[in-house]
Amino acid sequence: MFKNLISLILGNNKDTDIKDHMGDIRDVAFIIATVFFATLLGIVFHKFGFSDVTVIAWYILAVQIIAVRVSGRLVNAIISLICVVVFNFFFIEPKYTLLAYDSDYIMTFAVMFIVSFLAGLLADQLRQMLRQAEDGRVRTRIMFDTSQLLNKATDYEEVATITGMQLKKLIRRSILIQLSDPPKNTRLFFPDDCKKEFETEIEADCIEWTLCSGKDAGRQTNVYPSAKGIYKPLAINGHTYGVVGIMSEHGFSDKLTNDIINAMLSQCELAMENIRATNEKEAEKLKTQDERLRADLLRSISHDLRTPLTSISGNSSVLLQSDGKLDSETTRQLFQDIYDDSQWLINLVENLLSVSRVKNGEMKLNRSDEVLDDIIDEAMHHIDRHAKNHIIEVKKFGEMILVNVDVHLILQVIINLVDNAVKYTPQGSTICLATYRQDGNVVVSVSDNGPGISDEEKSHIFEMFYNGKKDVSDSRRSMGMGLALCKSIIEAHGGQIEVTSTIPCGATFSFTLPESEKVGGNE
Image (cartoon, rainbow, N blue to C red; front, side, top):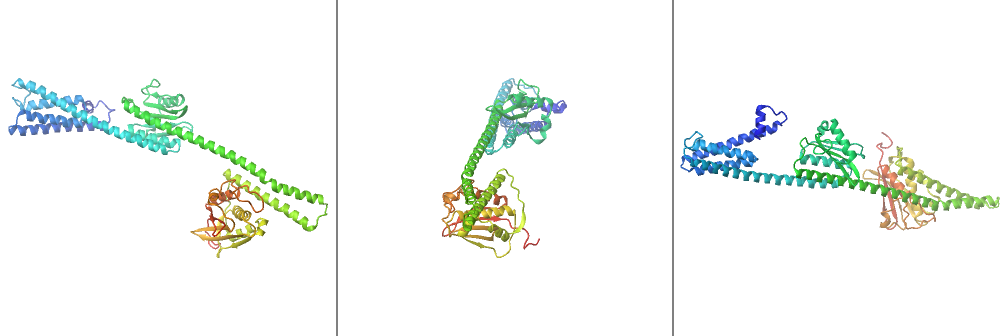
């Protein structure tokens, strides 16, 4: 403290922070004021006839009060000596001199100095213990907060940001965190304006060496010891995630601080390792799912294409071999069967192509404002021929509704839903296709009075390649792509699709669409 104050007065220490000097000046002013008031109280008590012991007690109290604010054994010894000198100057004959007629006062001065020094030393130790306890509490809180925040982090940069901010709180030094790949050479600075401190040639060499070797470099190490920063790798289990640079020209002599820094960096490394492991598991899971979907797709295609292709081949063979001997009704039925099976294959191929576009993220919507009733009418022209064995009702909204959609894709959704209802309900069932407005959205619903769908199936009904447990009415087995494709198309339009139970029996599939901003066809 006194050294810094002298340096300020002489002007020979330009590197010392002016705030530190101002703090020293305030401390000196506090010391002078405390000794002054102790002397003033001593004079008052002395005039009222109190003994020198009482006056000495005031000075000992002053030393303790000063020790609570200003730490250091040397400072405490100097203050104790000052108190002895002031006591001698104002209270010992001859007064206002540094002489003493009675030689016994020499022992008094010695005892006063020792007692004052010990009292101040005890107060200083108590102050340091309280400060260490507070520092420990703050550090523990920072470590706890760091652990909580890192547990919620989802990527490397978020982990690095949390670690840098918490380190800055802990040690109040300039911090650099540079991540290796991934992401490639991302640099984070704490605070943001400390970038230049790490851009010198020697600091850059330290960073590069630490990244390559996975070992400490910089100050307090044998590698680039002249660097101003300390550089530690973020590495665990053979993976190097980056490097942490801490700007510290004098290093960290406090072992506890070093241990806490290392502990925090270990938390950072574990968080990054957990993210890496999680990413690898997710990648492996996605790979496994892709393989399973590919296998399911091939198995479904080989199974489901066999029936219509066999029918087409058989009917074509009969027509070729009949040599015109079949009657016109039979010939027409064979041609109708060939046509229906080919249409089923075309619909299957359309679904396969749409699924592939959804899977690859290539589904692009060609939106336009269309009359919903026109879309419904067009869809009904493409419904499977087996629909003639069902009763299909269309309930249109009383007013004209304009929707902003990709017509081709919405047609595919409606056709899939109606065909699905035809396929999974017995002959003679009623299927109702209705349109209406609800909560600012346009709703299209397809309901039937068939056997319905169980709650267990509802949770899987929109999954790819899920076929359910019911038999289809036309003996064809579904590939389980239609409903999954419908869900993807509707969500791409910003809508939602769901399945509910129809009372008293059956199921209802309904989806929402965005209504056009045009009203009645006019802008």
